[in-house]
Length: 163
Image 1 (tube, helix red, strand yellow):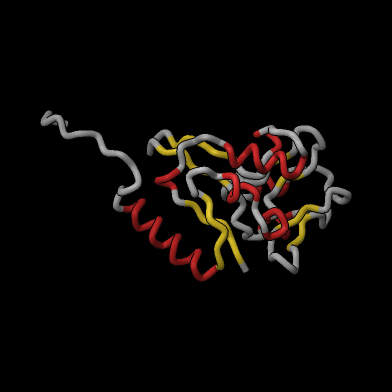
Image 2 (cartoon, one colour; image 1 turned 90 degrees about the horizontal axis):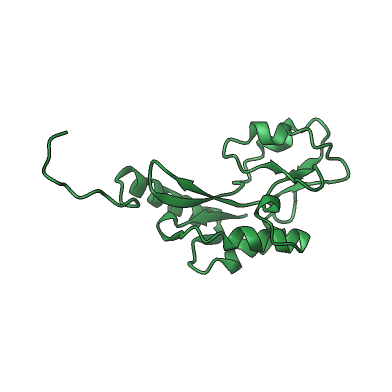
């Protein structure tokens, strides 16, 4: 199975991924209707794309059985005919990646575009990658290691003053 990973140090916050996603699914360029969202991390001055990591908590939480895992791609998929827009998926998502479409009132959860994510193709900086699970695990370990060492965030110069 393949999954999305990010290179946080490359994200410029351009939000082209959001526009590509909404256009792919709804033929409109609307960040509110995107399944990926770029947020500014104020405590660490970086922009970061927030997207579904396909953990499946929403599948178990949906009281209408409207959310399932696609057997071909392994991606989460929403059956809009069954979705009542109750928002349980939004409440259980640990990453804030699930949302409710402001137009239809139905759940918006990344379906990896059927195995060919539009956000990956649209990103001009190569921030988003669609890789197999083994490569993703290595990439995530490296990213978290860098975050822990603060290599991904700019540092303030030492001005020689006391704290």
